[in-house]
Amino acid sequence: MSHLALPLLIGLIAVALAFDFLNGLHDAANSIATVVGTRLLRPVWAVGFAAFFNFAAYFLALRWPSLHNVADTIGKGLIDNDVITPAVVFGALVGAMFWNVITWVKGLPSSSSHALVGGLIGAGVAHAGFPSIQWAGLNKTLIAIVLSPVLGLIVTMAIMLLTSWLGVRASARGAERTFRGLHLFSAGAYSLGHGLNDAQKTMGIITVLLYSTGYLHGHFAVPNWVALSCYIAMGIGTLTGGWRIIETMGTRITKLNQHQGFSASMGGSIMLFAASYLGIPVSTTHTIAGCVIGAGTARRASAVRWGLAGDVAIAWVITIPASASVAALFYWLISGLFLRVLIAVGVIGFIAWSARQWSVQS
Image 1 (spheres, rainbow, N blue to C red):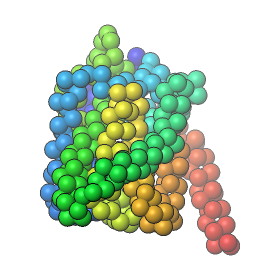
Image 2 (cartoon, rainbow, N blue to C red):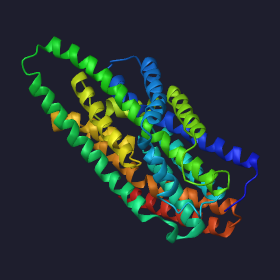
Image 3 (tube, one colour):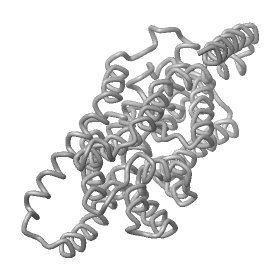
């Protein structure tokens, strides 16, 4: 068990909450992309709407504590919590935050959740080697990377087909009015599920930090003040918004009407509540992107801009290895292992240069 002075502990918790804030900012698009894309709400109102429901998830978890299983997976289900040190936590957070900033600047909807998973794996392996990995939790997360967008697409298409059949006799004006109301409800449910699943990742990090430094004893459980502070940080981050990513998710992948927006949000909320109950740190970005593509495909396959969807998919694939690499570098840096840092930077630089040369020749 590592011992850490209280001021340093507070500093690390502040870094974790900064990640949570950045997560809310980066993932604001997940909660409000459909309502902005369909012009159901003005952007400023949509951000406030999403922030409210992101925070409201705290009260939902108080009523049903089993919905906090994701924090357990992050805290002790990916890396053995007995080998985690403050340096590992710092490396994991910096790796995740670095990747979030890069993709935010580029306007790419990558996964904050999997950036944190990658950061934790990278820093944990750099510290204690591959035996420290809890393969059951990691495998569950990796499988969810593939399944969450696919299942989201399928569920959304099923909702589209079912509601189309139920409203076959409705007038166009009546259907539009009905789906506007349903879309607002489903967007609130999705924001609730987003806050519930995503805020728990930072809860797990702070809790394992408290546990590994001796400030938390006995059963591994998230203290109430940790949960509350994480929901507040995420809500404030969502209020700040990530407008470039919102544009990608809400309008550039495919154009949505109210029916499609409702179906995508409802399909996504079903996926997120199920994942939270099962303790899977699913990517809310992957989920809503799959649902948006499913809503567009249900209309016609050509309505989806598959080239942009492919670029988004590439960002997903490299999120975990990229954030893991940065996390390992920062762990070695603060641990004084400068030679490893120089070697790793040299290898990464050579790979990047080779890839650029190959693209120029092509």
